[in-house]
Image (cartoon, rainbow, N blue to C red; front, side):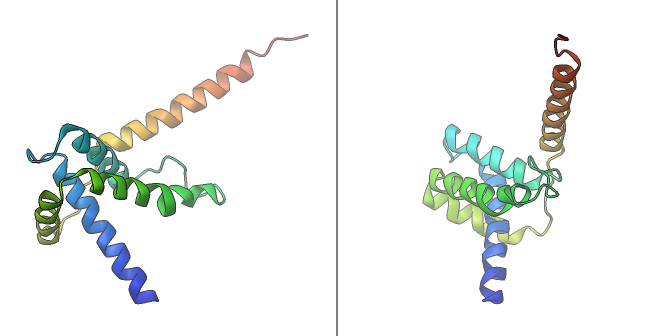
Length: 126
């Protein structure tokens, strides 16, 4: 069972790299490129939308949301292009990281924090 999980994780990693490549491939339709770019950026981001220290919800994105996003993006990419992109992903050893996605996630968290502070400070006094 452990070996099967390891193969599944490697396939997911390969598919994320393939989606990263699909976002730049001219054979892929624009809507598939958009989904592939979002999924790859989130997967490569060092920061999660829901931090892992939050009980249960912290791992929800890693275990459910991200694989579903990968599956959706793969289904949008034409099968012949996806096969070639997977072969290219197998050849690449380096894992690209998305600093832009990390900045977006940090900006979302800072905005949420600022909104929370603002709402607490602006509570009407009786």
